[in-house]
Amino acid sequence: MITLPDVKEILETRKVDEMDQIQRWTYDYVIKFSKITRKQAQKLVGELVSQCGLTEDEAVEVVNILPSSLEEIRSFTFGWKKLILTSTSESILQKITSVHET
Image (cartoon, rainbow, N blue to C red; front, side, top):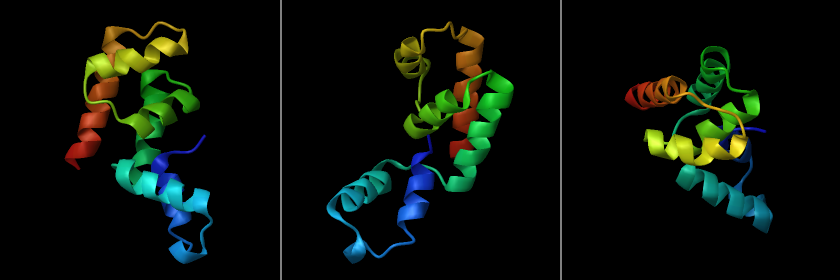
């Protein structure tokens, strides 16, 4: 799994008129929904893995969505089939908020 900012940076190495249709759709999507830089995304993934106990796949999912509330975090972590403590969810939200502030 890779983050949306990673995808965006990879696709930016190509000219849009040289992309096939799926690449253009993907590029349009990441331009609209990639909210942070690749460097910020990599740092956030690392922090979520090391400090919040998430797997790398879970951390990438969080970075791709960048939930803005505890309710949003709970809504998609529910599918992970593991208990995420409120304190962990709060820590995740704090890390996301700090990325948006920089």
